[in-house]
Amino acid sequence: MKRLSLTTALLFASPLTFAAPLQVVTSFTVLADMTKQIGGPDVEIKSLVGPNGDPHSFEPTAQDSRALAQAQMVVVNGLGLEGWMDRLVKASGFHGQITVASQGITQDTMQEDGKTVVDPHAWNSLEKGEVYVKNIMQALEKADPAHTQQYAQRGADYLEKIKRLDKWAIEEYQTIPEAKRIVLTSHDAFGYYGKRYGVTFSAPLGLSTESEASAQQVGALITELKQRHIKHYFTENQTDPRLVTQIAHASGATPGGELYPEALSTQQGPAASYLLAFKYNTQQLLASMRE
Image (tube, rainbow, N blue to C red; front, side, top):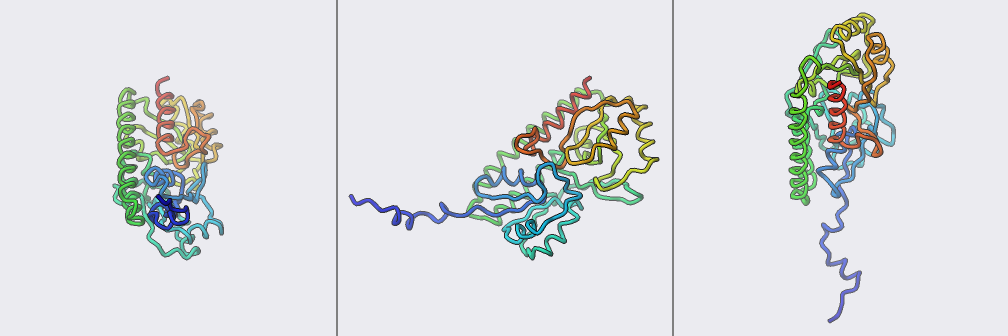
């Protein structure tokens, strides 16, 4: 029997075998990881804000503009997190569909500088994270119908992991007295987390790391910490720790560790994925409450 040459075999091979991965750009690392978990080998992802980077204060480069121009799909958080994205889209000439991962969630708001503002950190509640995943799944299936089945299967597996971790966190916090579920962090990134898991967070800065705390706000926070006998404070990997450290020293609190609320660590760090970051943050918080 005559064997086909390699060249002839390639001509008869399925075109799907050699399909290039879908080119996806995400605004920051949490969305990049979610998209990778669903997309697997069928996607190639660039995160504009890298590991340990601050999505509030990010300044895009010409290289970021080129990446966006070449993207087949773009994923953003929305809710006012990426104030720089509109300028970047305009500069890049990107005209494709932008997927807003937070689309459809129930938004939380808070008062900041006398204004009502939307809290953009919804992914820190795993319940909200499920909405993100479903939105990204639908966008991938629309952008790349040839791999719909793969995206649906990976997405379903991922959602199951999220549900299990969410259940674990709820059960763990129920073992902690409510009076001990109080935490000092750098800025208000844990609003949705606190609401979902019954934790109260205090922070000198507002929803954005670019906001500034007044002397009056700092003094009030120090008084609150002393009255509530908060023992530990937490810094964040993407923010300057000096202000929260100063407040903690004045109140007598000691370091509890570093949290990853809106930027994943490098692959070598303890929070290299969305679920690893959530579990790491939760374990550190629980440990401080159990002392």
